[in-house]
Length: 549
Image 1 (spheres, rainbow, N blue to C red):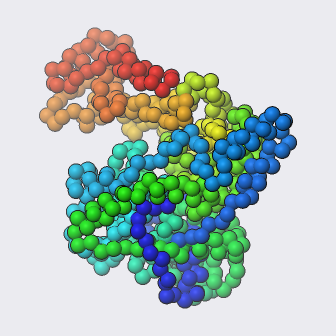
Image 2 (image 1 turned 45 degrees about the vertical axis):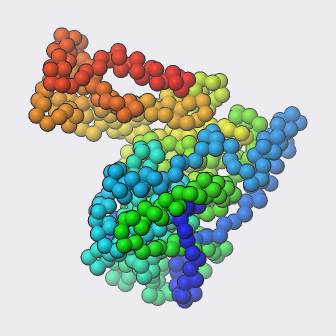
Image 3 (image 1 turned 120 degrees about the vertical axis):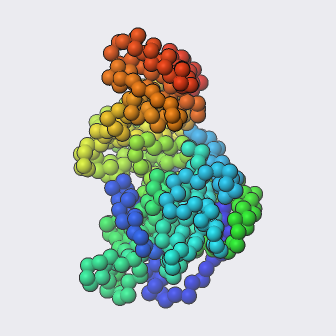
């Protein structure tokens, strides 16, 4: 699952401590994802897991075709033959997996690329003394992050740096206190945090001192949305009893053992006296990237390792001859949808691990909502093959939220393409051609708008991002010393980002074309190049046509 070099540790700790290390883990659904994340003294322990076999899933796939017509059954079997036991998923993204992150991280270490979302320290600060380092995937996509252990002010800290292909940025994906005495990182791709409540009612981030005290263990992953990471699972237990809870649900001792095993193999760190030591290590790790990714994909597709949805390894994942059959079965909770690389999240935090699977009911439970009675058929890329859009509505939170999910049929199975959310301050629209428009606001004179499209292969492309601003908010987009005032009730400035190119396009609000002409002239005089609305629309239409829209 990762591209780093590990060694198996035989840790000399009592069976009592092992039991505790292998227990607690807290679920990180949307409402739990940030809970207790900014614990300044939290401790992170980690280890690895053995996985369960998924023979039941293949049997389920075979059974699903028995009652269909002879022709349909033969077609489904041919799909099964192509898929084959042990072969990679034939997802809409084909053989795609993320590009190697190492060269990007090296550029950041060399100062060529900026480190985004760093909360406390810079690259220079990290390497001001001796550090320990390793590579390990802790975001669930199979690509490594660079993990750096440092000591500051008498405390240990961990910083995880990864490459985010969607944004083309090198980012801090995890940054927190790290207690080397009882915390580790599992080679299965998560960090474990231990805590308990003492007799005074205070939360203590440590291993329990008494077997009758309930231990809580969080399984945490890194996140591109939150440098404190995301809580993937939570286990609560007492070593004096045989009662275990996973994400507030009772589990058996065998299930507890399954999670315990995942903590047994831990990442091994090396010491570096300078950043050059780490760069040499990353270059070496890059050599076997393709082979490591293939191994990761196969492992996850076999149902091994850690998942955001614990039910994923045993989820019904039947094979269907047609898209219509698969969609109908999904709406009846008879099969699940797969999470792979083509999944894009808009206006929300759908934290998933590659290989996760969800039934419709599980998605409804995740969002504490209900699905609409009917799905909507859309045609992404205008190729005649239909995709399905479903909506889950929830009023359980601070405000009502609607979650739209786009699903695509590919080679007998279903894949999740998009998860997007709408609320009072941000809305998302999916049209019949697979265009996704988002709108939101961040102030009295500042609105945002984005347009994305899903092509015929199920891949999502950004067409543009646009900030719609009045005179005050527009100041952040013009150079210092350039004064430009305009009546925001008459004109708004549309600032488009299309493929990294910025276009300024003022648009009239009240039909005063003469005023618009004057503002455009003022912009030109002050060195602000203006693009007309017709010119911008032509650029957007051209990009949409590239993807079949």
